[in-house]
Image 1 (cartoon, rainbow, N blue to C red):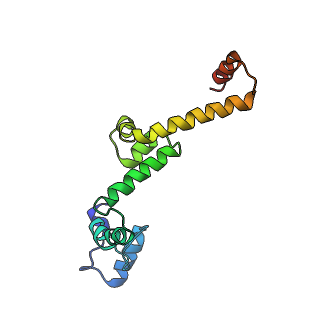
Image 2: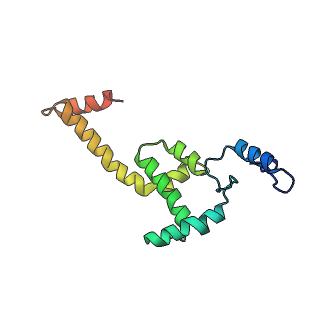
Image 3: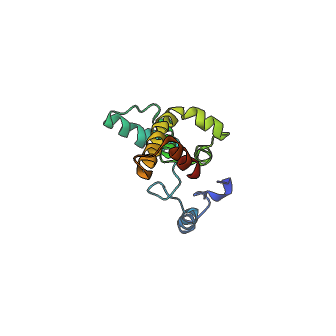
Length: 137
């Protein structure tokens, strides 16, 4: 957000300030309509909530971000999309960082292929199974 898009309360009337804040079209804001600041959210809202729930609070934002990336990959969102959402330099970094998620996805892949082969023909020969796999791509 450019510096000139945030209203300066010292030089504007309350009506103009309210109009300017409305034009920012913020998803989340303070009760007075002004933008939220990360440090305030962390200190005032997130950390106390984590402490109350018995969750680790020192790395709460990082853990939420990492959980978001893991969840996306588990839901078969392309790694390039996950990389862009998390702001990683490239998809290779994302894949290295989330390798633990990908290991679990191997099990899903084996189960999917197994189910496909079983559904095609319970008495299929190895050659028929190979043909089915090749034709499925």
